[in-house]
Each structure stands twice: as C-alpha cells, then as structure tokens.
Image (cartoon, rainbow, N blue to C red; front, side, top):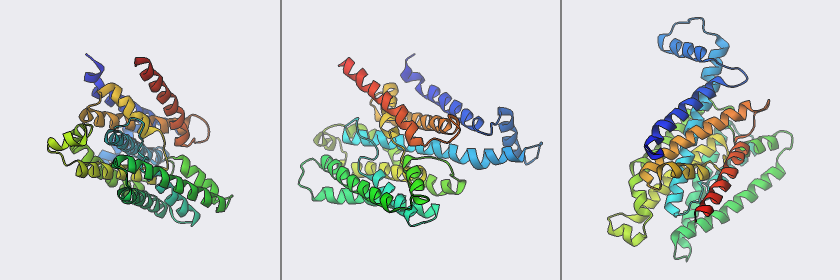
Length: 335
C-alpha cells in the first residue's frame, strides 16, 4: 500500500493528534480526563465537579484559537494550491495578487486610527478584497498578451505601494502604544481570538472553500493551454475568475483574523503534492488537511515553546523556509 492510498487516514490521525496536543498544552495544562469531563458536562448539563478555571480555559481560550487555526490553515493551504494551479507555477503563494499587503495596510490604518478590533478586522478584509479588484482592473488595461502575467506584475507593484504605506504609518505611529500593536499584528498570531470573531470570519472562509471544492476537477483542465481547455467545454475566463475570487476571499478572511501568516500557502501545497500528486481533485483536500494540522501544531508551539508567546509568522518562516529549500534541492537532484 502506497502513501497515496493511506494519506487521508494518516492526515486525519495527524490532525486529531495535533488537536489533542493543542487542547492539552499551555500554561494551564488540561488532561484528557478534564477535557472529557468538560465535554460530558456540555452535553449532559451536569456539574460533575467541573473546575471553573479549566472550563474557562477550554471554552474561551483554547477552543476559539484552535478552531481559528484549523480554518485559517485549511483556507490558506487551499488558496495556495488554487493559485499555484491557476498560474501553473509552484512558486506562487496566496498573496501573489497583493491581498496580504492590502489587508495589512487596512489593519495598520485601523490601529493608527485607534479603531476597535472588529473595525480593524473589517478594514483588513475590505482593503484586501479591494486590492485584488484594483489589480484585476489595472491588469485589464495593460497591453500584455498573457493576462496571468499581467495580474502578477500589477500585484507585485501594488503590493510594493502598500508596503510603502505601511512603513509610512509605522513612522507616524505612537512608538509606545500603536507601533508595538502594528508590529505584532503584521507578524501574525491567534491570541485574543474570541468565538464572536469566528462567527464573523468562519462563514467567509466556508464560502471561499465551497467553490474550490465543488469545481476542483476543473483546475486540472486549467493546467492545459487555454485553447485545449476551451475545446473541452470549459469557459476558461469565468472559471479563473471563480477560482481567483474564492482564493482571494480565503486569504483576505484569514489575514483579517490572524494577521500575515507567511509560507503556509506556499509550502503546504508542495507537501500535499508529494502525497497526492498533481491531480487537483486529490491535492485540494490533502492540502486542506495538511494546512490545518500544520498551523494547529505551529500555534501550539508558539504558546508553549518559551515563556512568551511567539508570533506565528516567525515560526511558520522557521519551519517553511528550510523545508522549501529542501524541496528545491530534492527536485534539482531528481532532474
């Protein structure tokens, strides 16, 4: 039996192991017995000597960030796999069209204007989506023969402008109150996430995942030249727009909730491709499970590795960059 046949049971076991580790680990450890009693109390509505501190940690601290890690990990991995398939380039990441830079500019502006956390998230999401619309509009005006290349080039240019805007706001921000908040948000993290935050963001992530999952078989046809795909009955332009809109929605929702979490959408599809191959029908669910497990494990490390909580962006870079270099060397050796 090959890895391809056992990938789903293996990944589900890895996800469950990461889930138990995430609930159990932290400054307030929770044993499996305590977790079982808390779940039993929730379904039976009997006290059974439940510790109020343990219940508060389980339901209000661990559960929201664990659910957020699962949804964001799956969403960014799915967006990365979709972008790499659409652009036919394994080096493409979810922020290729400037969505992360746009969302970062919106969030930084919200922090600079002393807005509430809800307004900061709304500004991040709205500016990320607006950035992609602007990229698409400018790319249509360009004279490039390759529309996908136009999107990439315009995305890189506007992302650089957003980066300049972020640097300007950091320069103007209060160095004692606003600047630390801006810096930590840009490095990414899941601390402080509540169930109310998830209620606003989870539907957006699910809406973004649904078209990708239902139309995943069409991605295989988009890997063909456009003329061949059209002869097979595929509306190439419409299908690409659906995939771009879905992947952008996933990225903008994830960034608005957790900040900029780099490398996940770039590396996870490569890991999934080793297990599932290039068939997008298998690659997408494999990427989602792998991304959820990896971000959940990384978030657990971020709050348990040292006494202070490490930003997610630091850990994902430390894990993703060496692995990506390994994949490049491994691929060069095969050639």
